[in-house]
Length: 463
Image (tube, rainbow, N blue to C red; front, side, top):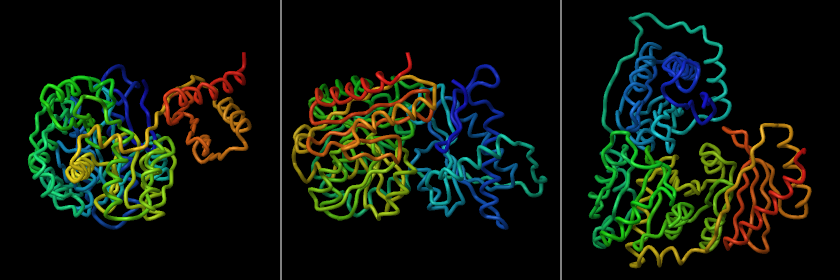
């Protein structure tokens, strides 16, 4: 696959023919463009940028290119080495830095890497800033300062600082978790979760058995924390008679849980459980993206609070959270965001909040899961490279359901309030496809709704 440059960052496969994937020249070019954009924003002062990376095989190479380029641009660098995405985001805040670069391709396979770009709040850049960096990189013609103006390098380790911040967060009930005597099996898929998560669990008083814990980037399985990829974790939870299974992706911003009987808790319900505990103690609005489960809305409203959905993308979620003063939010992919901790997905704070809830409920994970409304999401896609056609297909579906509650802020979402169903159609940002996600209280109803919409699309496709 070719290089993908978007507001989500710069990503691609490492190695192969020039012009394909993420090459060393691309890394230097986009890092320089980011440096130029940051220097223009903070003109007249010397800048400091935080750099952290996950454990994938290309990480050290990419880190040295990025760090060297920033220094060449006259920017000081705080390199925190092997660090999770949320650790790097926290470091930007704690260092009062002017931005940050996270070197991770998140849940992508090990041949991928990426530059994820942060602003001075430790949050992802917005669309305007991201597009400006892409423009600068493509125009090229860079001029670098002389040797006397080069930046300085400082190396720090923020892992323990992140753990300490979680332990001291007011809604983490450390005493209750320790008293519960939990036993957990952890799968950090051979990345930085193998460094930080066992230390967090030990500090919480949780007996931790780790599989796939060596942070060498040789992922033991597909690193996306979906049930199909976590069968080994599920089996180990049952064998060890553990209370919970914990899976994180390579950069530790997504959290998926396994129940004591080996069944998946459901990544859509990670945020639901964290919000349930949170809203018992601190009332306020919640936010998730429009492709996330309705279960968060139901739990939020049960606590007497207001739920809103945003466009897809973490930056869109955090922007809406700021706008409405949300107390907790995130995404249905296992991403939990606690804005007064830091405004990014964080598997560490998510784990600690859910263990606090479990300790107080004094129940098993299966019983906890049964307390939440059951929903099922049917995920489908239709391939088409015709951008104009995509718009017409969405219009056809919109016309069919014009009497229902429709939202066109990000593709098309149709809500069927009477029977608690919804369907979302979105053009992919990275592939020539239309994504069709449908949710309903049963698998059959979700599949039927998705099939109905796919039928409308197919009927309007040219022969």
